[in-house]
Image (cartoon, rainbow, N blue to C red; front, top):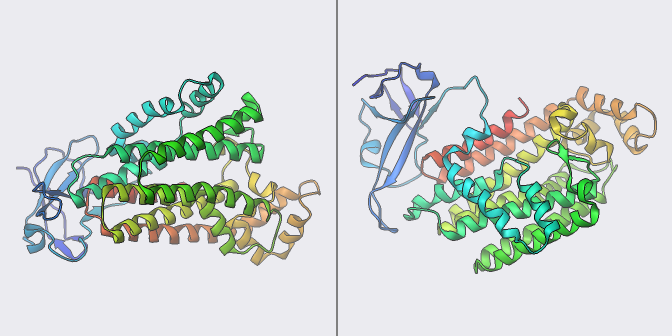
Length: 421
C-alpha cells in the first residue's frame, strides 16, 4: 500500500497525525478533499451503528479509502452521542467551485427532473407547450431542485432511507415550476428584455401569454402539491406563493425611498428569494421523516443561504457587466429598487439620496450614483453581510452526518460567495 503522509491534520475535535492512502496517485495532498462518509450498518430506522470511513477524493482519480494511523476511539467505535465531529480537510483550491461539480452527486436526480418537467405542463395548449419548452430548455443551474435532492439524501441516512421517495422527487419538480413561474412574472413586472442572455417570454410571445404561462405553472404546481397529501408541506409551499406577492408589493411600494432600512430589505429579500429556498430544504427534510429540530435547521439553512444569495445578486448588479449579468448593469438602482449596497452607501454619502430622489432625471446621474455606491464602501459592507448569512447557513448543517451530500450543501454556500470574489 502506498502511503501519503501529511503533518498533523486537524479534523475538528480529533487530530490524525498521519494519513495512509491506498491509491496510486502522486497528486499533492493539498489537492485532496478528505471526508467522512457515514453509512448505516443495519436496515433499522430506529437503531443503527455507524462506522465513519474517511474517503480521499482526488481530482481525475476515483475515490479511495483513507485510514488514520493514530487510533481514535470515536473514529473506531462510531459516534454514540453529541454532534458529529467535522471530519474534513479542505485546502483552498486555486480554481472556483463550478455548478457542474457542485451538483455531480445528484446529477442522475436532476436528469430525471428535466425529463419530468415538460410532462407536468401537459399538451393541452400548444402556446403553453412552446413557452414551457423554451423556459425549461433555457438552462439555468436548477439550484432549488438540486437543494431538494441534496437535503433529501443528506437526511435520508438519519432515518435509514435507502433511496429518495416519490414525494422527494415531486417536491423538486414543484419547486422548479414555482421558481420558473415567479421569474416569468418578475420579467413582466420589471419589463425585462433579457433573462440569462436570452429574450424573455413576454418579449417573444407577448405579455398576455407570459402572464398566463406563469399563472398556469403556479396552478399546476399547486395541484401537484395537493396530491402529495402532506398538510405541513402544502402549508409551507402555499406560504411561499403568498410571500412572492408580498415581496413584489413591498418592492413596488418602496421604489426610490431612501428611508428604507436594512431590515425591510432583508424581509423583502426573504419574500422574493429566501422563502422558496427555505421551503425547498425544509420540505425535503419533512419527507425524509427526520425530527423537528433537524427539519428546523434545514429551514434555517435554506433561509440564510437564500438571503446570502440575494445579497450577492444585488452586489453583482453593480460589479458585473451587462454581458455577464444577461441584463443591463445597475438595472435595480435605475428602477428605484434600493438594495443592500445602496442602503449602506446612503449612510455614508448624503449626496446619493438627492440623486436617487430625483429619479435620475439629470443626464449621467445614474452613473454618478453607481460611482458613489462603489466608492463609499457600500459593496464591501454588503459583502460582509452576505458572508454573515453564509456562516449561519454552514452552522445549520452541523446536525447532519458527514457525507458527499452535506459537503455539496457546504460547497453551495462557498459557490455563492465565490461569485463576488
